[in-house]
Amino acid sequence: MDGLLRRVGLEMIWQEAKIGRVLVCRMDFESDLLSSLEEFAREQKVDAAFFIALGAVKKAAFAYYEQAAKKYVEEVVEEPMELLSCIGNIATLDGKVVVHAHAVFSDRLGRLKGGHLLKGTTVFAGEVLIVELSGVELARAYDSVTGLNLYTPTPKP
Amino acid sequence: MDGLLRRVGLEMIWQEAKIGRVLVCRMDFESDLLSSLEEFAREQKVDAAFFIALGAVKKAAFAYYEQAAKKYVEEVVEEPMELLSCIGNIATLDGKVVVHAHAVFSDRLGRLKGGHLLKGTTVFAGEVLIVELSGVELARAYDSVTGLNLYTPTPKP
Amino acid sequence: MDGLLRRVGLEMIWQEAKIGRVLVCRMDFESDLLSSLEEFAREQKVDAAFFIALGAVKKAAFAYYEQAAKKYVEEVVEEPMELLSCIGNIATLDGKVVVHAHAVFSDRLGRLKGGHLLKGTTVFAGEVLIVELSGVELARAYDSVTGLNLYTPTPKP
Image (cartoon, rainbow over all chains, first blue to last red; front, side, top):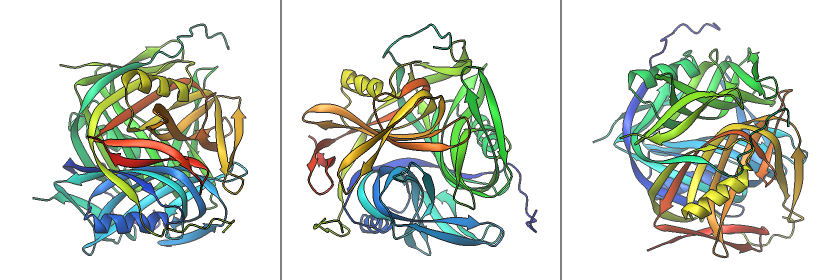
């Protein structure tokens, strides 16, 4: 549908990994949620990992991906919110470490919001567990079907 | 309440496990989120695991469990959505590998939805980390108090 | 902003840990989600861990943190809901094991709610994976900037 021609069925690309370093983090007040994690990963040379996080933010920036138009629609919420859930991973794009995460927030009136996490989300408090994966490379590359930079898990010696 | 008579307090059924295989997956465009994971787990003989996932879907099928009536109320949302969170596990039911997962989605207008994941949720993009558990068996069986097929973690030699 | 003077930029406090015990749990019908996990952690002497959970609750109690006023606003929802996501950790406060978790719920009408999990959330069914962290201490202490008891990850011999 929507002119998308490829249909590969139930095949899945996967790779077995080992657990590398396990990193417990407390994020800094007023740091940028996405940028700090990315900077930290680059500094610590973590190039393949998954993480979970919870906390609170002073403002949030996130996006919804318009699949047909292949573009992100961005939203910024300029108010304090709880960070109810943040699930993400660390991979590479053109050899550079990049963080991809989706977040769920709750505002003062109990309304839930969220999306693809963008830079511009300011940490009030943040608790993160990063599980590094060794033996696997997660290189992202442009995928013309989705318009996204998808990773392909491959073995890493 | 609601005629539920058993009250076992703060007892919890638990089992210590070891981490088995760690599997990093990229799901296929237009595959079925639940079925693909289940098929993959069966093929790879993963019968005890927890996983986390993020991504986007072309449509979503999920359910709310009516606890008093002991039945699922299903909902299908026929539009592209972000997959903000998916937490689930892999266990067995009558010796067959089954996937149980709950998902949170966000639609074009920023409304969040979600529930007990059903077959019929079509992947646009999906990134999954599966952590296999060894030394434990997660056999599901019908529980008359809740009407659900609950697992009981038991040692596995 | 809001009289908050400290700004420490992109520094992050972190510590490398090892994975300790991996505990798969099935929570008891009508147990208290937060209290049961806390009691279990105390009994099993788990004082540093992260966990993920899914399930359903008979009622939920959670809070939104008013960052400017530095106080929690509590909400209780007296109806059955799906537990779509629960991400949390186990740390210590004044030497006592404490559980911190954020949860996302979905009610009968498909409305999502959630927040900082409080005692008073009654389990209908709950499946939890606890990953203990060894080699790290997660002692919480009052942080005057946020008004929260934040953990500082430090090495543990």
